[in-house]
Image (cartoon, rainbow, N blue to C red; front, side, top):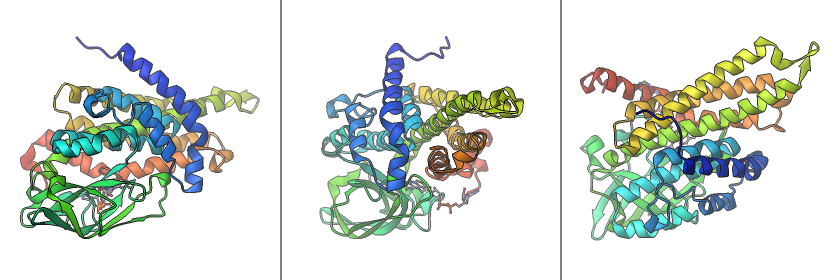
Length: 384
Ligand SMILES: Cc1cc2nc3c(=O)[nH]c(=O)nc-3n(C[C@H](O)[C@H](O)[C@H](O)COP(=O)(O)OP(=O)(O)OC[C@H]3O[C@@H](n4cnc5c(N)ncnc54)[C@H](O)[C@@H]3O)c2cc1C
């Protein structure tokens, strides 16, 4: 049997979040960007609404929701405030890694704080010399007594300026590529951790930046899972975050389409509403159709994940085309709203800047096409 409907519970959750997103998030979306501030109170409010703990088990304060429900949250929050969708995507990714691989003690320490919104935990893989080629990282973790001593530099990291801790990837075996990488929970309060923000084009309230790690002594209990297994552990998590990123971008784009449809129905030119001109309606039709296709591919991928079925190809297709189609749609909406949409009075220019960031973050178009090519041609035809 094939069913394309959401459950009643999922529809109720969507409608609760739609109301919250439209009434509490959208009116302030541009404020945090203009003021260069992070609305921590809203991150915490999302914790109260159950958004931060969707992928956290109930015993640790979460709701243990399925991935499809988590996707609904990404799409709906994306409509109101694109940057707050990190509370869905990042929390889901980080909670899954901790819950699936960390010790009981780490779970008890971090999962309740993540679910409530009290703590923000980021993920730090990228380095100045290794982004797409993540196995090429150079940070090192050397075991000494009951600690690992960690040195290195992480770059491009979301929540760098606002995070309370990071899941940091470092080499525990410098000779072994992806099989020599381990993951650690590193609280930013530890000696030797320094975080510096960037002056970014978009995603401003998310405080992206670099982490500098100098002789950071991390207790061995903070190792996540097995030594040298960090890379394998996180790769599976990316299949989730890529699907959620697709939906957060699609949410922002669908909101822009809805706003633009209203505009072209009421704005007149040459004696008629703009919507009557096919030069105006057809581009909206094109983008709306592309976004619907991506949306359903994303929910399909999330459903496959819920069934424990393979979904890497679906995740990569959504991560590749979701941000791309969304930025194209938002760009078109900006043009169809005329000169006023080019000002900072309207949210469209910011949505465009914000969504473009996630054409890069969590893997570019090319790396996602490499994943799809591997599925189509087989592992033996990988270029590396
Ligand atoms: C908004 C945002 C948020 C981010 N958040 C985080 C985060 O929280 N944590 C984190 O660790 N990182 C984060 N990043 C970093 C991000 O994951 C990397 O920027 C990304 O993986 C690309 O790496 P790079 O920038 O080093 O580019 P490079 O790897 O140098 O790539 C440059 C270009 O070359 C292309 N390229 C590389 N290799 C190939 C190949 N084999 N075939 C074809 N083309 C190729 C790439 O697609 C790209 O277009 C974030 C980035 C952004 C923009």
